[in-house]
Length: 388
Image 1 (cartoon, helix red, strand yellow):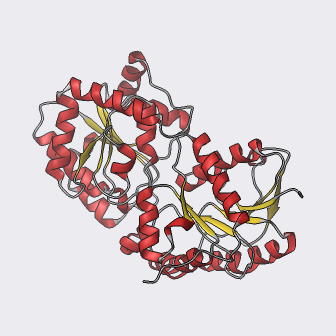
Image 2 (cartoon, rainbow, N blue to C red):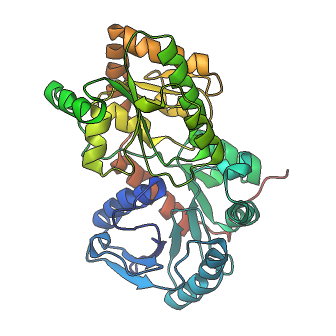
Image 3 (tube, rainbow, N blue to C red):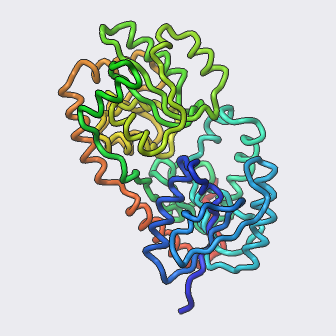
């Protein structure tokens, strides 16, 4: 049997700029290529990659223009440059971890669609990006030989929106960075001194995107502080990539905005320190395909408050206080439970530790590899669509 040749869209492997899908790509691929030296992997970048992303001797890099960070450039890269390269190298499989596909390419493809937020909340995205996603992603899904996604919730969502037969969609849950560990009490005290003059704090982690529900988080924090005798801060850890007028207006109207601390983007070690020293993670997104920060909190032995909708109950199980993300009083009540009841905190930490055992990047890589092999063995050109 000839060596498998697998081409991979790795344009989101960016040094010191890995976010959700970038981390999925990094963590799963470095394990897959190491575990399968019998296969040849061709990583396809839109700029010169950092050498650390070429994980093993069976990986080679190809760079094709343009640098695809705008809908017009997406079109050029995925519809012209990428298909031309794929026709030249003739892989057994094209893997695309960010859900995009090369529509003119006739070979077998596996795409990973992480979520369909843009279908449910299109106004959260700039107009041109929104129009690109909503026009092309149904086509990407229909063209793919198989589809992988990161939760049963997202699988159901893809099936319903794009009428893809469920047996053509594989669930490959996300994992968590193994470097994240609990902190000592002395470390927690030191970090609280640095961030909040010694006061305890809640933390949010993620890009400051509308779907992360920051405006509601600010209102709920004000509600909590106005009904609490405790002096507690709120730390926001993430880049202001999608900071909107509504978020800005709500923040400016806060009574306790002086107790809101913005850290910006954090390295993994910095994230460990900030998350590990917190009272709890408050993650009240109104749409998530998975929710990696929940696992990060479990790994740091930190309690979790999370939304009771989309994928988050599936990931949290019984290891979080689940709240209505549109009800500030409900969120504030959960904050009171965390600050006022040590027994609840201890229960959540124990349940989070147990829940974490269900998720790892090793499992993700194994499931994604299984999906890749299914795709290569698939006799048809694409997934069968259900009748609407």
